[in-house]
Image (cartoon, rainbow, N blue to C red; front, side, top):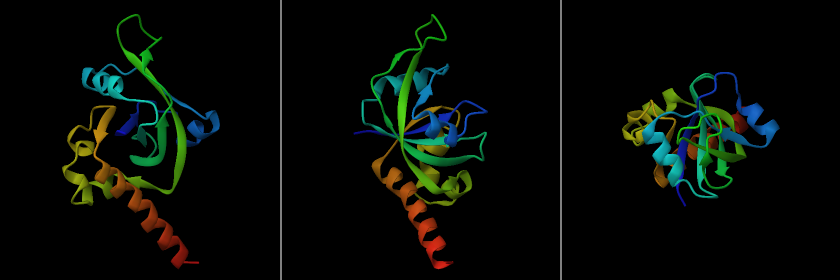
Length: 143
């Protein structure tokens, strides 16, 4: 299984929109490195959904629904891929949180910030999930 960070290129689409639709369709990506990464995705790979337009944060976890396919918005050889949302973080994980973490600040999440789809290591994925658990514990302690 592979792990990915997917930066939503859509300025008006929110994580709530993804949840309501039950699918996130990633298309319109015109970057060769991102295209290569999309081509490497396999069904059930895990992806974190990140949005710059909605607060520069990771909002949830998705699974790759199936193989990449021809992007129908162009006749050129670009790819699209679909994801299914599986988990919503109680509180979004901000870019600031990621940059302040010793493991994550050296990752491709930060180094390749202009690429819509970047691979992440299992330990980076687990570290981001821990942010959600920390937030959950903080919320429980305030009740």
